Length: 223
Image (cartoon, rainbow, N blue to C red):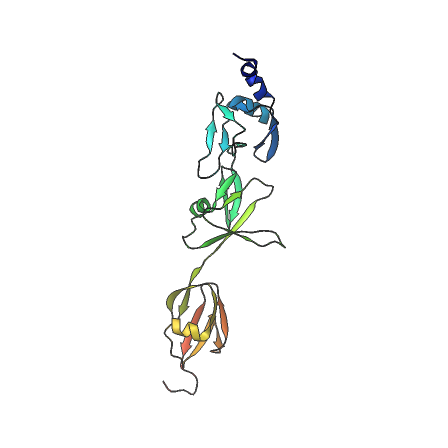
């Protein structure tokens, strides 16, 4: 065996320190490989605690055994976590998740969000809220509780006590008449509680859901 071959193992031990992450904390490791037991000691965990390695999608996160050797130089192999419930809010629901990341699809399932409705992450001003698609991953580990909200793209309105399912947005009264099969010559009122408010045909109405409208023959007009 040549000197270069016999020293190969020592060369591996003298690699540049590798950056690894446990939850949100940063650590360095001076060798290419580490066992589960060594990682737990580095992170301050007990041997019996379950340590997981976070892998890049589409691979599932994996449980790391104490005697398992992990190649930390491999791209995407440097994130680890323990499954502590992380709280977040979805509309008025307070929920918990046992992984550091949650996808939009997982949010939809755990929050029972209907298919087609949008899920948004509330972001502090002056930044814009973020649309969370089914494949988008959200990190739940930063300080504070992430707040999500649902935007229903299709909502139900009532015109003359008949339900109609339409997309959220701005409509003219003329458009609402067509949706409700109301005569163009009739007048349409918005019903809010017990109050009727007449609407001009050229007026616009912002539809958010659950609005109610009543139509009737205009005063002075014949049926």
